[in-house]
Length: 172
Image 1 (tube, rainbow, N blue to C red):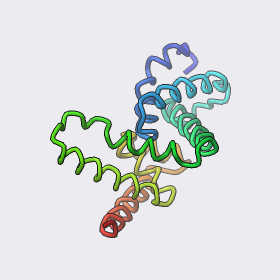
Image 2: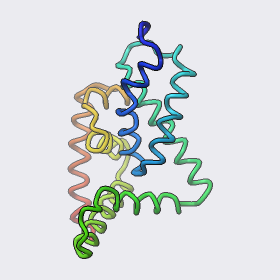
Image 3: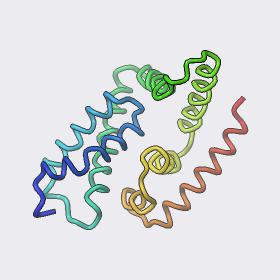
Image 4: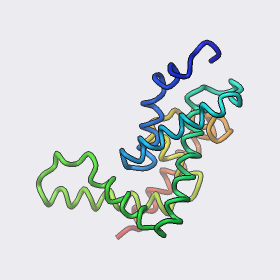
């Protein structure tokens, strides 16, 4: 880390941090803004990086905290309207190739159901599942973020999948 310039760190990890935040927020503009904020915070706190985890993991932890701060701010501003808008945007994102109205409606409903299930899923299951499936992080990286080992992340992810399967059966 010492031999890397911060610009090199930005170039190396920008995409990872951006896609991680995109997986959390579901909105490209929000992910871009939060990515910039993440790197700003990392630059301010680079002296705190001890090297006891991978730099990408440290940046993702900052990104997670930045996202959580953003969520709290949004909740204060709109009492949930932003969250509902985010869910709808995420349901439509990436599905423009399906132009058959029925297929679009079904896909949107499926996506909305999954977001509803994730919304009611307890922590840390919700976040571990999101980090693994949408954030594409390894079990080792997830474990580092939570201050646990790889085995803990694997078990937690497996339990999250089981809980989601149970909840899917309950959704009408």
